Length: 218
Image (cartoon, rainbow, N blue to C red; front, side, top):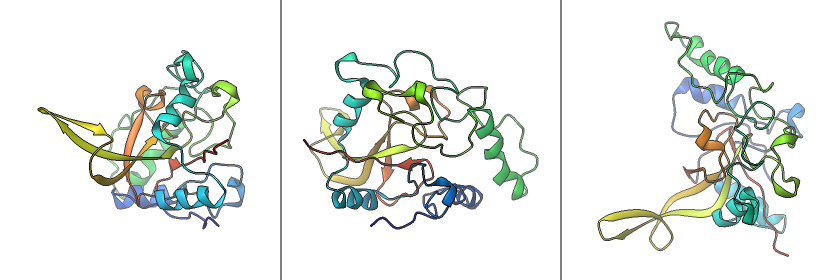
């Protein structure tokens, strides 16, 4: 049902897009236990429908990540993120991100250019096998609610005006973007792997650090 995701597509440099496409899991036999990535919103939504489910809303996704009434800061609790808790951008990622620029001739780039979430290595440059970071599981042992790949939700970016302030939420025209949650293996900021983290992406974006999970109604 879901076509192999073999290339990335989003607004970025040629060097970055080449590197990103090499991280897509669709045609790599060694990545069959990894999350699907490089998938557009429409592809993700269509697959969930085919499988008898749907994409979760932002509210549903965050409720699960927070552990419901536990209101966790991170899916695993309150401990600061580290290499045993989440697949995000550590030392291994920062080194790998330099390679596209070096390949394309930007050899004067200082070695400290790429930011890191922490100064240690989590052992993987791209995605990790689903459930690899057992210490970072959420309530009910739900895996990878932080890191590995951002996840598409069903919730649209909708702008609406109240007085002099503009808000993002529900109640206005669809802007063509969807909310993603959870952070990914390229995340360099603590805020990206918190349960409240959100990024808005174009419906057609196919990124190596963006995938999905399906929700099923009882």
